[in-house]
Image 1 (tube, rainbow, N blue to C red):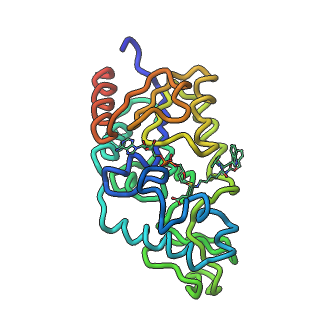
Image 2: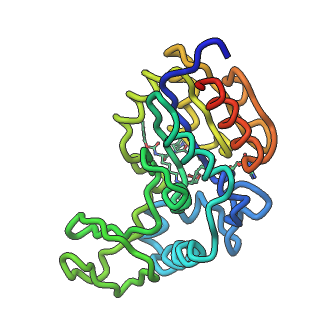
Length: 237
Ligand code: BJW
């Protein structure tokens, strides 16, 4: 590599957590008790059947205590710590494996399942227990107003201004473990590429938007990501 890319933006999806034991959304194990994510992860579904939606997220929140970050999460945290340029990690995942691996420059664009959001007082609280329809908000004590702090279909993902700015300014955009089925994340590659960045995807299979990437590495994130981080850091030394 002649010149290393100064500013890197990395986007991750469910595939990066698959080797930690968390199910992806659109794989063979992508159905939850017969429900597609598109049918559960909406404000309308929550309005119709809050108990079902709480059950879906409570089960996934409980599972977080049983899983650990894998080699791909750890490699991205190492890259952030050792990279001499700017680095931003944007994850679509609502698990907490990136932060537990040590990542700090991190945006959870689809929210965090380890937080509860009170729609009565608009405050977010750390949450590790099940949320129920009768759970009081720890801030305002309202009952029945808590929902998981998750961005559902039709809702605006978090921190889009900061993400768009980083995408426009970056020299390298890397997408890891995402199918490219969900917007706006699926369009990030086109923004970065249009603004002159190199683009790389690492995924178990070519993603839906694979043709937009300058380079595709096909395989498991737990193997591809550490190798890529080694390669990148070697070029800076
Ligand atoms: C491995 C691996 C290993 C496996 N190693 N790889 C029509 C056209 C275009 C857009 C729309 C449309 N109709 C509606 C929309 C918008 C909509 C949307 O995109 N819908 C699509 C279904 C078409 N989007 C929204 O509503 C978003 N909001 C929005 O657009 O607001 C307006 C706006 C306008 C302008 C600017 C900005 C905003 C909100 C989307 C919210 C998504 N929420 C979810 C659920 C909540 C979180 C949760 O419950 O966990 O987020 S949906 C679900 O999909 C979850 C994920 O974050 C997201 C993406 O999935 P991901 O991560 O890609 O997982 P998979 O399973 O799809 O793929 C995993 C990949 O990993 C696979 O390819 C595997 O091969 C691979 N893999 N093992 C490497 N070991």
